[in-house]
Every structure is written in C-alpha cells, then in structure tokens.
Length: 169
Length: 208
Ligand code: SF4
Image (cartoon, rainbow over all chains, first blue to last red; front, side):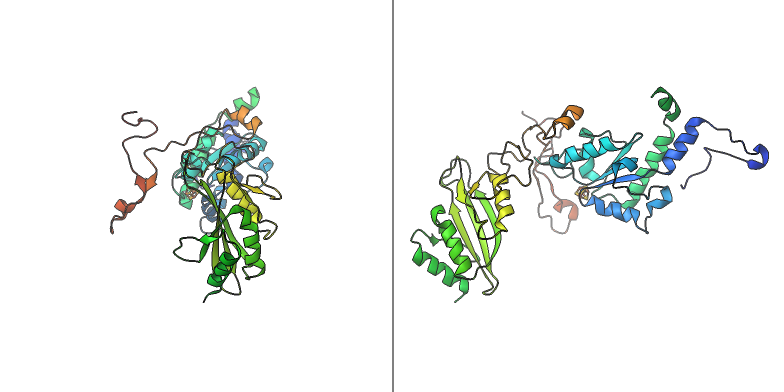
C-alpha cells in the first residue's frame, strides 16, 4: 500500500515484541490492504478494468491485484459496465454470495446511473440493487480514476468501526 | 447479368404472387407469406444462395396494413451477390410467418430476436423463446407503440425483487432522445445532446 504509514507505529527498539494499537486500526489496516476485487465486467468499462490490473497501472501496488471470479473469495465488487435488467438479478445474487465485509465500486457512467442507456433494457444505476460505496465518473473512466476510487474506498474502510461491528454481530 | 437478378426473375416467373420490391442496392422481391418457404428453398437449392445473412422485422406503425414485415437477406458465396426477400404478415394482431430454421440452422437465433422484439411468431421454429429480454417479459420493445424509455415491469427474479424492492422503470429521458447535430468543426457543438434541456429527473418538464 502506498500511504503514509502513520496508522500503526512500532519501534521495536523501544517496545520489544509488544505492539500497542487500537483493534479498529489493526482490523481496518488488514482489510484495506488486501481488497480482492470481484471483477463484474459487463461492458466496455471492463477493458479499462483489465488495464488497471495490467503492468502499466498495476493495481497490485494497492493490494488489490487478486481478481477473484468466485464471489466467496472477494471483498469488493467492481461493477464495470452496463447492467441490463436481465443481468441485474445475477449481479445481486453474486453480491449476496460475497462474504461480509464487502464493498461495491460502481465504475463508469453506466454502472452509476445507466449512463447513455436511457432504455427499457438497462438498470438505471446499480445502486438500485446494491449498496454502492464509491462511484467513478467517466465513460469509460481512466484507469487512474479507478485507482483513485480504490484509494478512496480504502480510506473509507479505515474509518469504519470494525471492532464494535464484529462484537455486536 | 448478375446471379441475383436472374434468380429474382426466375422467382417471379414461378410464383405469380412474387413482385418487385423497391430497392437501392440488392435485387429485392416481395412474396406472400404462404410462398415464403418455397421461395427461400428455391433460392438456396436452385440458385446457390447458400448463406442466410439476416432475418429482421419491420413494424410499419399502429394501424398500418400490413403492419409487420419480415425481411431476409441471402448471400450466394459462388455468385457473390445478395437477394432481399420480404414477406408481409397478414394478421397485425398475431403476426406469423413460417420459420426458415429447417433450411438454415442459423435462422434460429435471428428469428428468436425478431420474435423477442416484434412478437412475430415463426411457425415451425424448434424453440421460439425470447433471446434478449428475459422469459416472461410482457412487451415487444421494438414495436412502434412501445415507448423508448420502456414501461414499469416486474423483474424476473422474485427473490431479488423481494430483497431490493426494485423493478424495471421507465427510464428518465431528461429531455432526450439525444441527437447529434452537425456542428462544423466545433466538437462541443457537434456532441449528442438532448433536444429539450430545460428539464431533468429533478426539474419536471415545463407545462406537464
Ligand atoms: S460507462 Fe461508457 S465505457 Fe463504461 S460500460 Fe458504459 S458505455 Fe461502456
């Protein structure tokens, strides 16, 4: 992860083998540093998603290079493309199969709002069936924009009250 | 003389119901739906039109007679020419033509698409289901009386509907349809835009 490493500080010379931190900081650090995407590639935006994973943009720098085509192994669904009504129930079912905690990035105009497809066949925004955490504008968004969305999502995850959620669950 | 013109002339001589069809490119012929299969078979087996390129439907509009027409494009890979064959559906309420799937297996999905979009039934088709919209979709979206934005419809998966409480909606058209206007070299002017931009989903259309 490329970020200032201030959320956990550990000076082994002073503190020996003991680390003192908050449970939230540790849990969120672990979660945000290895967000495995579920690549929900449905249209042209998926090509940019592939570019994000390839060497030039290299999403591995942010700990999210492990694209899992099994929802059971993934943390963040990247909806990249046009969601038709016919596909929408499949998208929702795949989301339901992802294990908690899970997040959703709506990549591109189509996934965010239906985009240019003001049509009888296209879901007018994937937020009608899924709780979306980050929307990315663009048709398609630049790969950098998706990386930015991932970093924003990581920042959001780092603010979550994970420990209390786990205890209350 | 091209193979296609010869074929069309032969068809007209053999089937008196076949007439010339106005065309700007390939030779074209109108045939009655009752002769359609025999004409297509003759094109394939006697005139060498071995490839069925396309099956499509036409909706001439509510109240037109005939309302629906089915159009076939066949290609001869030896004569390097196309023929267009069109057949009107007699009944606007239940449009129907015979299926060409037994002649060209490739007709199968083309006919399913024409059925899905226009509701034209292809009699004798081995498996006439919708192909683009989901099974059970109650409308035929390319018919002229179907609005571009769609109509509110129940989604197919009852569990997902119960979970998300959502369905297909009439898409917000926001002043659309969006059209491109010739703007010379000014690309901003030439971009597709709504005809009427005074209203959106949030600001209702003035005067409605
Ligand atoms: S937003 Fe644009 S690039 Fe992305 S899926 Fe839609 S049409 Fe394609």
